Length: 163
Image (cartoon, rainbow, N blue to C red; front, side, top):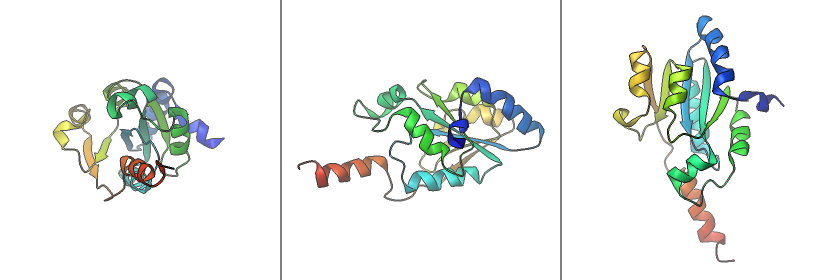
């Protein structure tokens, strides 16, 4: 499956990105949990991809999601979340990471553009200083109002939780 070829490791991806960089392509990186993919995620990822020639998504591992979101998350396990992301036209590569943040991946991959949601102040974006110190930029993509995984979960609980 083509989608599975998009799911890779930092070690494998480093050489590919060097070739792409040498060919003049602009590498974009973003990261997140991407649990229960929704319209907000799709628009965000398409917006991130529009900032360059290829998009690498750092995907929080299950353990990492639990640390961020609590013991009841993720709903969907990491390899399934990665495959769904890899199936999107705008995602070129997916790398699963277990660290609390993606700084080590950002340092290894050296993207030209680091993207986060519009709700993130630049001084709180992990890796922003590193990317900018290497001549890159930090961009934010507007959020889609009312689109959130937590909101979807809440709706499910309210509508179906008592049955």
